[in-house]
Amino acid sequence: MGFALSDMQLQSDAFGPHGNIPTQYTGEGEDISPALSWRGVPDGTRGFAVICHDPDAPLVKDGAYGFVHWLLYNLPGDINSLEEATDQGTAGINDFGNEGYGGPMPPEGHGVHHYYFWVLALDTELDLPAGLTLGSFLDRVEDHVLGMNRLVGTYERN
Image (cartoon, rainbow, N blue to C red; front, side, top):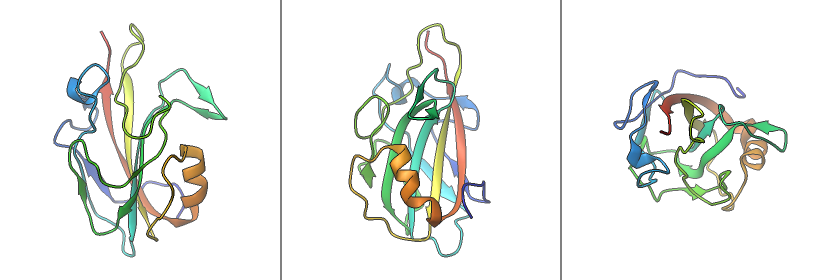
């Protein structure tokens, strides 16, 4: 299938589509990941991954644009949600240089940024090592994506 939107739906109890992400999920708050849930999973799904990316960030790195806030993979195919501040899965490297979730924290005065939370349904169970970059992760899973969709939240730093 490659990287195209599917019928899967991703949601959060913390914020709605294009809604404001509460401070507790940002670098100005507790900096914890929000709860997420999904439905409409494609047949044959054996694993999941989650990505949070800010395309509004003024950063170009290794040919990619924006800022990676979260990369989580090796999630089993029999789940349909993640709890707030989840410890499930294996964390990749975010653009803060850390493993795990790093919440929104756009530069002061930079306006509203959009945060794309993606869920990817995969046709295989992953057993990838911790600490992959987004580019390295995507290179390894591109041929295994059955479906994907996103939830966009917003945040503006005062």
